[in-house]
Length: 241
Length: 218
Image (tube, rainbow over all chains, first blue to last red; front, top):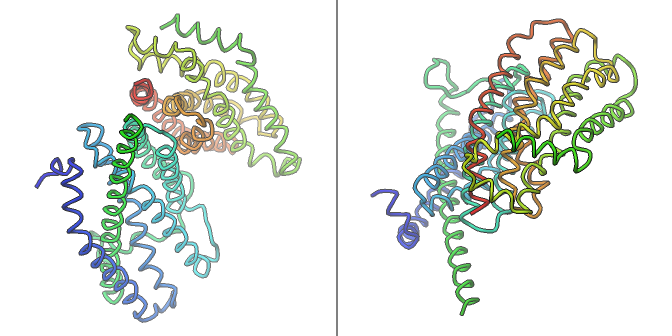
């Protein structure tokens, strides 16, 4: 199995058709299960019941960043090897990533109101997420603005490359600009300090669920893009005939 | 290359408002801010570095779409692309021409607007230095955005949406230099960061911009 086989849209459609029901099922099971399991956890002794928003906030934030990385890889594959399905996958991923960023920002604001006493603070993490959202919006807008699909894929690919560098640069530049209010990572492989396993396992499940959810949505959207492309080709043929 | 630079400068000046427009915009902005936030020295002085830098950003943004759009319309961009000069060099020269017509006047006139906004005198050299270091990066990034949107009909709004997020690191360090200069703190670290960003942008962005232009000229 290599990704080059799936540069053939027919092969991609056939494989994903069988895969999709399983993916959707497990995504719903894991994300709903993780979030509900999260709601059944005991209240934190300092944060009270607000701690439960972490089961939405952390997976969404994780996916928001990883979806951009996935778009970067997909754009590179398109630019270097003209893998058409890859370009469409990058296009399909962008709105999902933007929504994940919005969920992370919104849940963070809802949590921050009782905990920090403010909906919004110009904290490095919050700011870099807002910047990430701006990059998503620009990327989506560029896809919408360019008519020729191959040119659009090329231009957005270049934008994604440059944008990645600047998103990363902004991430560290804002550290310089303002000190943070946001706590450090709650899950970390290196540091000994960890959150209690009561919270950790539902969080893992929710993260897995959000990952599967992204995969399922990505495949659905990519399939839609392929169908749209086929429709456009059919219409173009009709016009010529 | 020099011929292209001279041609672009001549076009910018003869088309009217090439040099003055950005500065005039800057002046209007500096005149409007006190109406918005109040005329006291105590409120104006702390926000002055930020306002001046954001103003420079917006003044730069105003004239970006002219970098390639006119040449694209009359077809001279196609000639440039097929000329022996690499397209990357042409992009760099056009960005330089844009900087000379908008960035340089801003750098020179910035202390004047600093006075209007009650910027402390000891911050003036730092304001000029940070603008001199930062605005070339703004022009280069703007050329990249203009290259991406050159074929589009409603490119103007999209251009600002694409370019402004790219300006964030430059803005952060540029305003930080001026702010630290105003408070008499050490400015070496942000100055070096800003110089690093500008040099990196000048070295790498011409390739990205030329790639985008080639796609749009296909």
